Image (cartoon, rainbow, N blue to C red; front, side, top):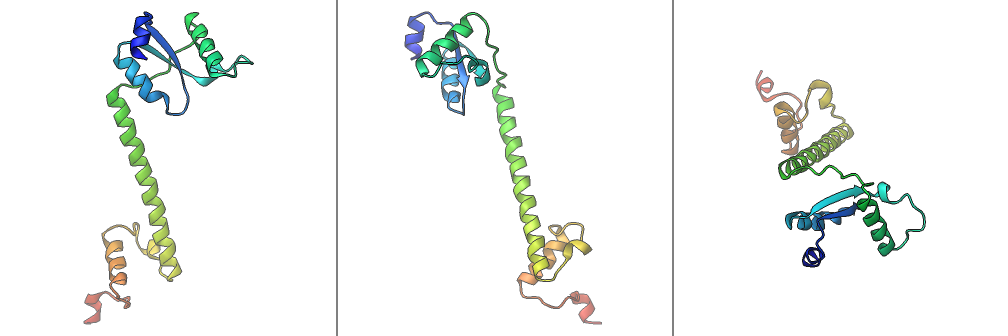
Length: 148
């Protein structure tokens, strides 16, 4: 496709961003040296009767040729990676919060309310108490009080 476009002296390309299918093609075209306009679908769907891919393609080409399409913001590679890491971190924080809430619900079901006595049930003290319970400890008194 890149060779065909070069043979036709194409300099700029407009393509619609639908789903994530555009990403590989966009990267290949940009790497090949084309000026690629990535346009949002709502800019190209305003005319009725454009139902086939061929008609849609011709419509996008016409809109691009008369300058009616605006290019979407595409971050550089560093910012794109940073966004991925940031979103992944947020996802892990949300999963962690959900799991901590599940731990607290399970402890409540065992008639234990650690969150009343501790600010963080996943902190050092909370984890020590939970590990002691998992190890079979059932005496609520700390070991140093048992000797008194």
